[in-house]
Structure formats: structure tokens, C-alpha cells
Image (cartoon, rainbow, N blue to C red; front, side, top):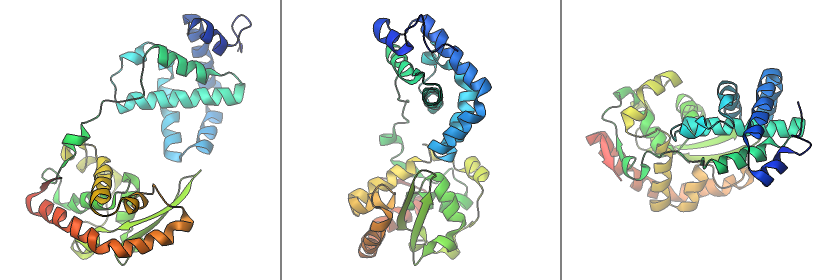
Length: 292
């Protein structure tokens, strides 16, 4: 595969004349050849650079949707999470091509996106209005504690499922001390557990599978994407408990060496946290809905 068009590098051509159809065809050919002949190398590169879940997701999207690269049909797609994932997978692929082949398709890709006015945004589900109303009305009773667990802990969905199922391993005196290894990043955080408000022995269900959660705790049942429970958790803790502690509890602040400092803060603010969250949970349990 040529690394230039008429002796001029593709990024230089794009700077001079914009991204022409000839350049688009050239780029699509390189991308198709890479997906066809170097898919395993691309997979290994992704897993070495990014979190395992993201790497596998982008590989799958790149294989399935690489034809959207430098294709005007991409602009016609609705601004959804799927479109963003397609763009991210193609971006990862162009980076890989740059590293492996020395062809800077990534810069060409970004230039093309800019020319087509395709933006890295998706239509938001109006979190400021819709996600303010947390409701359990459409959630099966066996899943109430899981929703409240996500809401009070602010854990990511995958983390929440693991810690919920392994509660007795992670929970020490009402505090969840967590250590995560995300391949290229290791971090630690700690947060209060739902069992401070609803005793563990009173939880309806103590073991849940990912498939069951996707079926019963979803956007249709909650009224917004479940991951926004994490956003709401941060809003409550930052406004009513302690903003620095709110960041630490979600893993946004504090290295592993600083963890002991923040854990001592958890002890100091436990009562304030209880005074904040007990009324919220009580209202949810009583009416199955609460508005922040």
C-alpha cells in the first residue's frame, strides 16, 4: 500500500486542498487492508493500550463498522452512543496504522471529521431533568437494593455488580475499600455501603447476574441510563457531604498512598452521610420515587 499520493503525504495534501475523494478512497483502502490482514495485531495493540472492555468493544466495532471511515454516511447517523463508539473505534484504528505503518491517517481522520462537521457529542437524555427523578416503581422488588446500592455508592455498573455479589468480601464495618486494576491504571477508592441504611440481611437478593440486571434495571425501567445513578451520587455527596470526599469515593481523587487520609475522612463524615442519605432512601422505599 502506498504511503503517499503522487509523492505527497496524505496529511500534507489535506492541509493544502482539504480531504479530497481520492484521499478518502486511499484511506479506506488502507483501513480495509489493515482490518483484513492485521486484525490480530490490532487486537493485541488495543488490549495493551486501553482497558480490556474498551479494547474488545472498539475491535468489534472496527471490524463491523470500519466502512463508515471517511464515508459521508457517518454524518447521517443519529447522535447516539453507537455513533460515538464507531468514531472511537475508527480513531483507534487510525492510531494503530500510524504507529505500525507510519501513515498518519489519524490526523487525516480528524481533519475529515472537522470538514464534515461531525462532532464528538451525542444527544443527551436530559439528565438535568429526567435523571433528577429516581424511581423504583418499574423495578422488580428483588432489584431494589441493587439500584439503591448503585445510587448510594456511586460505583460504575461493572464494579457495582461485582461488589454487590461479593459484599462480605469488600465491606468492612459499612465501608467498601476497593482496589481496581484497569490494565494501564491502578487505583483505589472507598465509599460507604448501603448496609449502613438497609442491613445486609434484609436485602431481597444478594446475588445477581449481568444478564438479569440488564433485563430488569435498564433505561426503560429507570427512566434514564443506569450509569447516571453515579452522576446523581456525586451531586448529592458533593453538595451535602463533602466535595473532596465525593471525588475520592468515585475514584476521581487520591492515589493509593493517599487512601488512608481519605478513609479517615470517611469516619469523620459518616454521620453527615447518614443524615443525607437516610431520608432519600426512606422516601424511595416508602413512595418508590424521590425527586432531588
